[in-house]
Image (cartoon, rainbow, N blue to C red):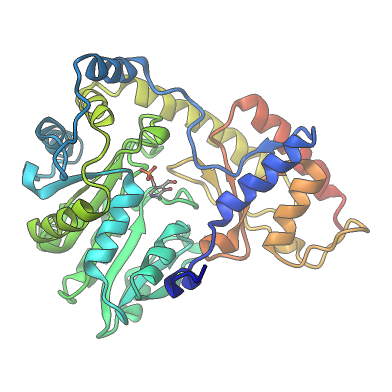
Length: 396
Ligand code: PLP
């Protein structure tokens, strides 16, 4: 079978590759601690599950409208006002089968072949693949640990060219946990004001897992209102990864374009999930905040443990559930059997020697680091950090 060339530009996400390797080792009876996945380890809160059961029992099982059921669009509109003080009418919102689909819709509706898309590194793996699938040209802007992996206005301005069509980023960020403050976003917004041809995708899927106590959206700068697209979803904040519900809020023309595209791809998102999401979004966030507090405790533990390991340099993640330590000081070192030449070697060494699964940083556009998810129990994290410390002591 001859496959389409468009597939040549993308590869399997390394996050998935690592999860597979770790599953294979587990199948051989090895006690692997898998910290490679970006998935809350909590169950979906009961009140949300009950709403889904009710939807099934009520027979709410038919094709929903492509953009989403009216009560969910209304709930998202209310949520954006309640949590973000943003005004989006129901017809400026569209619901999809996960934030990933919302991102794909938006990129495919904005990017033409040859268009440049600015992506600050480190970035979430899918961004570059979506741009490449659309025929666009990712323009990576390196952000370093010295800047808490955040983009500065100067770097942003330096990357914009006449071909720049789109900018995409996440805050809180996967993989670095960096969270942009209002002042930092304002700095970027002031640059964007000078380049009206650049659209902005603001991926806010980790909004509720924020340890600063405050989430800021670049959509609050009203001059950018006609070109900011907010992407969010239920997966992370409500532990609903398997339910597949994401949404986008933005200018009417992009929402209409995504509706047109999605109508041909997948139609409306799962009707039962949509009903459950109404309950989740209109609820009081007690369960969400409990999960976020547990992640914070784990963040404090894991960052403390990593800081005690000689040669490991780490920033303080202020959101999401990942540590992204710089491990480049181990390049060139060996335990006598394995020599660590790069981030992938380091991650494989941890898997094979310590039986701890992580993801190498090159997957996120940063080859000096690895990503460690702390969406795992405290016991697993303590065990993993103990094993990692021992494995690193053997590298000389
Ligand atoms: N955006 C970021 C930054 C993510 O980390 C993820 C999931 O890992 C997504 C989007 C996709 O979320 P969803 O499960 O809603 O497709």
